[in-house]
Length: 267
Image (cartoon, rainbow, N blue to C red; front, side, top):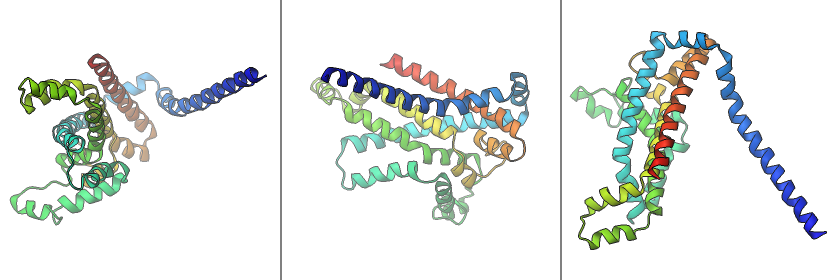
């Protein structure tokens, strides 16, 4: 009797898990499939060939490339400090790094605007030097870094925290310098975490809308990225918005797939 009850409980649990997981997968997959089947391929191709679409796509790729590059360049030292040092107030710094992930993107854009605007906290000192940041392509990159960098920093920090420090100790016993050890021992071992973090940061930067449109505005060829183009098109031409969405989804899928393959090879 006990074995039969145990078997039924296990079977019921599996069914429940399957139903919940299947429902969730459908919840994610059906809207994406709806985008793909909304327009015939010929119409999508015509929409993609529009100059404004190509311009927005090109701007998104260029800005996300630089924002991801800068995120890795500055974020890796931050991840190392948070993972390997015991600075006073480190917990506060961890909260500071994570804050952009929970802030509404529009709030992030407003914060950047009142900081780097012409009369902002920092912008007032840049204006006399002829440096203007808001409503420029540089502002797009800054907004993307602000909202996307926590994804890389936290993932890289987790990789460093999980790394067995005995590998580094062994390198030090062979008289390797800290820089050499970090470059030839630590970085190869945490490469999967770095690739995952960079992929997450890039994906977040590519989909950024609120902070970008608030801090950088919407100027075709200068600050109009793909998400902004989708948002603008949805107000007047839903079919164009669908085409733009499919293009953005295809680019995202391709890059994330390439990063996934790279991570598997790195492992």
